[in-house]
Image (cartoon, rainbow, N blue to C red; front, side, top):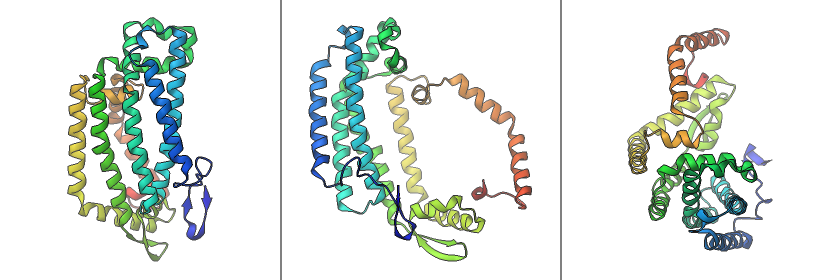
Length: 299
């Protein structure tokens, strides 16, 4: 991180790529596309016949593709987040998102085939040579029953590219164009969303309160737009979950987070049974801060 004028904060991403327009970015995408094509050509339809050693080699190659894709994706995302209005960052962000969807579709077969392999032959997970990837294989085995066909998985990737991912980008751009009038330590300032949001944890209570009111009053004006988007995102999640035959809308998240429903249920029960303790904690905190009552921006 590097500090520049006006207390702005920018990311120094030059260790990843020199700039958003440098030819090395496009070359990295082209090189990764070629590597991914070769990976698919070598392994697609052949996973079930691999030895433990060959499976290990495939996992390492897959991991390498994923790491390179993540580097390009993070660079594009942070560049875009730093300044969404610049044509160069917009162009790169779109280019990388399009490339990611293409590469994800090329690799869609892998999780399906490896998941089927370990589901049908769980002994593979315990092979000594694969111990470093045991957790990865266990997760694929747990999710194997919920994989769709390769064609369906590719269609979901395309759907998300122009659906929820596009909405996320639109939401970011929308917030980036709005300004917020906040009283910062007694002085009125017009700030961007990120600047105003950063003040929600400011030590000065009046500043926190002003930032919270400014942000949420503006968001409330377009509340129905956000509510409509969230309803559709939830319905999309439920539809895909039904198609994947999950036992509940939570199961995909439980698998992704390596946890089970009973643990979550126990946690919620304990929280529910001890709400009074947390309320007492908040009352004591208000007394220490010499406030009659804590507000949302104090928590």
